[in-house]
Length: 131
Length: 131
DNA sequence: AGTAACAATGTTATAATATAACATTTATGA
DNA sequence: TCATAAATGTTATATTATAACATTGTTACT
Image (cartoon, rainbow over all chains, first blue to last red; front, side, top):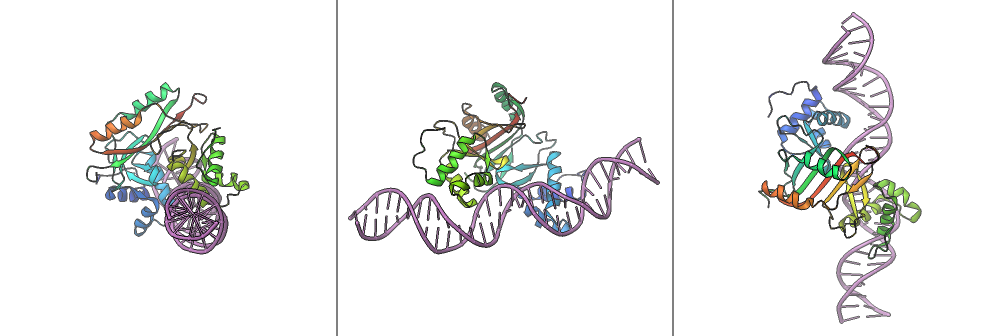
């Protein structure tokens, strides 16, 4: 668990703490029901917190699963350029961090006359434990 | 427009023709309303056709947009391993075809002790026209 | 041709995911 | 301290997707 999450508002902290303690991606409505005892009562509140957390790079969305995961990379600069390994058996998600994919995809884009700004990469397969 | 789409059923052909003629990704409920005159009346019918078309590789889903696009690559072998350039301005989508990304991602996966099976890559930015 | 097996369809209902709209409260800074 | 912007609370609704089940169409084997 991280030290402090300064600058976050109450609802943002509640949602981020849940995701960090969970260690796995959660769905918005799971977050909602898991935070009701803390005072979050409506989907809007969850989505608003998620939007902000995504914006500042603390949370990423797994598009293919409609789920949300806390970023465990210190000083993650990925923001909205994210890359994951997703196990099809246990659903474990690992964020790729040192692969320099931004420049790789930037290069591919450039050759196709396309101006890269972000990417979303989801690699599916089997993790070490499940394969 | 393609020659014939043998083996496809009626609803599958209706949906695929719409997507092919459209040339851009469409949402399921847009497909529904655009095919009602052809007899498709319920979401289930659209989603069933899409599922099958995706399974055989004729259609891919753009996960981040909840939309569906006909594959314009002849003899596309990507099936569920797909890679797209997506223009953030005009929403134009280009499928990457010759980049050999499967083996690239397979390599990354292997080094992380992960058994690759598929991937979904969405690169966002600005196309030639919009940049 | 008859028929068993299976795939696709039609139909109704509902689940799951996400946003709109607006009044109120809280933080921030000149 | 006052103006402003941001975040919240709340209700309602929009959007995306699936469940369930009865019916029809296809296939292929005899």
